[in-house]
Image (spheres, rainbow, N blue to C red):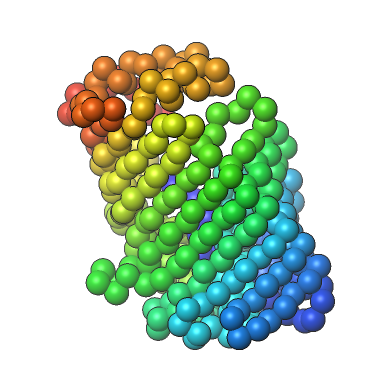
Length: 305
């Protein structure tokens, strides 16, 4: 989670018909839509694609819808919200944010978007029939919905993301649906927007990201969890606490046995014996501190590098 894959973007220059991201440096990301329509309800795009420059990471989506229920965002700012999300998805796919995206010209757009959200804007982005691919990674997702708003009680940023109809390469084990609700430290994001001498970051050592809820479905099985993550400079000083629950674990093991590696199957089969059972649900309290992973307060000899 150390990579900056949320909330980085640039203002888009929008014209009727085809659009191209102009204020994100081309060295970072390029994007294009075959059609763009503005209305009082928000912004619609068709045939949208984006590429992380100098990589093979590509996003394509048949339809994009951007809304702001507060009606605070201008057309340009609505476009920014989509650019932010596209860059987030591509950086997550690629595994990191390229150095070219830490360009100073990205920061004014990040700063403006954060200011709008702090003032009450609530951008929501929906992609329909999306494809994310890079080399041997190829994912199709029927619907992706992302919502951003300020958590004024904590002074931080709330990010909600929901994906449905997820599929990958034949034989690949993936959830069919996935939902996450996280709270990110706004201070880190503001520093990223204002300090050109720091890399743009989602979260920095010593800050805390709260996973309010996550949920994924895999056939008849479901995974739920919540917790906190406080990254350090290495695994040795990273801290995490998570509560995880799986419903219908037996069905999940059957699916994994058919698609996952033997090592993954064995690890999950062993994990069920360490879990707390409640009907058809098995739960674990997972922690990490001083480089040691523990499950239900039992330290495990798992090497972290």
